[in-house]
Image 1: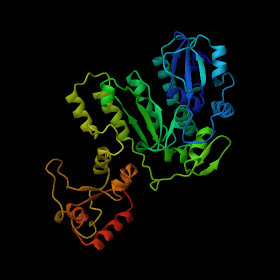
Image 2 (image 1 turned 60 degrees about the horizontal axis):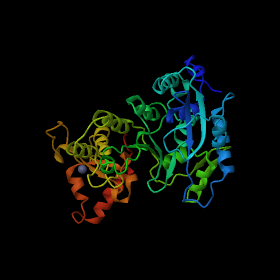
Image 3 (image 1 turned 135 degrees about the vertical axis):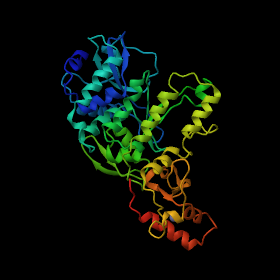
Image 4 (image 1 turned 90 degrees about the horizontal axis):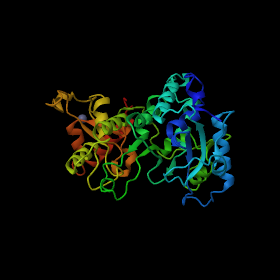
Length: 400
Ligand SMILES: [Zn+2]
């Protein structure tokens, strides 16, 4: 059996990237700190007609073991766990648990300490030095996301319940951006603590870490055949199939996800500074929600513009009007803003935001001088001029 001592006594030990990701994703302490259990769970979905059979679960466990590459230890099904580990139990509702990887805590260390050691081990792995999304990084991401991720077709995400009870645990998710080449705007962390239902105790839903489904199925792929069926039954077509991984064609037109980490990191740090373990009154919650761009009536981010994308656009894009920079001097079209001593620009969505949240991304935003922006207002300028203008923005090679 896998022992904690084997993993931590040699800080340079090779842990397979897949297992590393799964450990990073979630550790459940059980049997009075005797075991660290790494769970893999998923539920039957109404989005496919395929029945979730034991055969599919066993196939999935086979793929977990294939990627974990461990000679000493295996992912086991629930029947085996119940027979062999009678002292493992927990309060949490884990009805969707399908398989677990059990590590014996023979060193009797805390989960926090274990995570620190595992984190250190990750930082000395050579594969994280490469700038591109290599196979090892993909395997880490699969371990992190797919062992517990559920497909959210309506919001176009893969979501995992994100459990944390300390700052270092909350920051685990940042490795996906900092070391695994996941573009920052593909990730979203949905904190629940500011939501009305959470505050009043009616429904304390877990915080969720979400990753863009289209980016994921195209770049990382799906290893669970049952999830593959869900996607196929919902109009996703297969791009490539390997022994266990199926890649899908991406549905979105905007495939250029930019690798900017700032927004995601900003949200995590904002949360640490302002929300975690703080006792907030109603007024403070209102202020924080406004700062995050959350409406106080609407619990969802779904229909809200992301103010950080707009701010990012102000920071990273050149101070040039995408409409008239080649014809006019900006001096004649705008003015110096008193606050930052820079030219004033308005931020414009090329494809209107009303077409969907996926258009609230940096690639779809341009800086316009006040006159060019005004010209696009309905009924103000001639339609043919407006169309000409719009066409021009699409031809611009985005500088970011
Ligand atoms: Zn202009």
